[in-house]
Image 1 (spheres, one colour):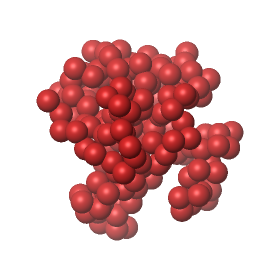
Image 2 (cartoon, helix red, strand yellow; image 1 turned 135 degrees about the vertical axis):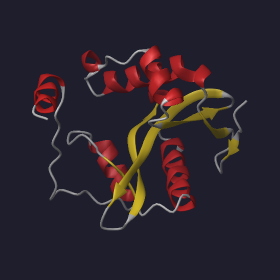
Image 3 (cartoon, rainbow, N blue to C red; image 1 turned 30 degrees about the vertical axis):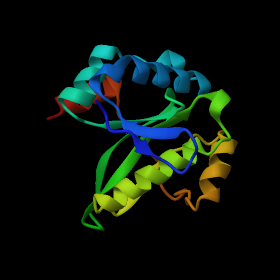
Image 4 (cartoon, helix red, strand yellow; image 1 turned 180 degrees about the vertical axis):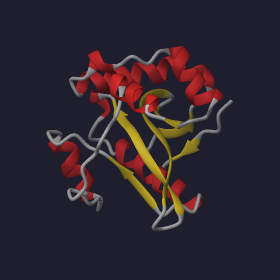
Length: 168
């Protein structure tokens, strides 16, 4: 049984996901992808998530619950800063169901991850945000997050990833 972490928000708690939460995690991922108009790009399955999250432990998930009902999640993992010589926490996804937004639950999840980063002696806590997502951008700026617009994200995936790997 996962330890329930109380928050300053009435009836809102956080817990680390367990293997039994795989279906819920996939549901949250699909809801987020639908919001981002990227649902057709989700190829994750319960089996893939189970292996990645609970066998290989490639990432961690926290679940936010309001009055005992799951209302959101955050999926994150450690990266590393060579300049700082310390790990960081990279937030891959943060999602709160639409009917539960505006209550401070997303900020509470972020605050918990910031506290976790401090506890784990991390030097950074970072994430990406889609350029068109003005509500999120405004929210992130309001909590002191700084857009790193001098950097461009590059990605190799699919056939390009296969081709590059063959070069070795």
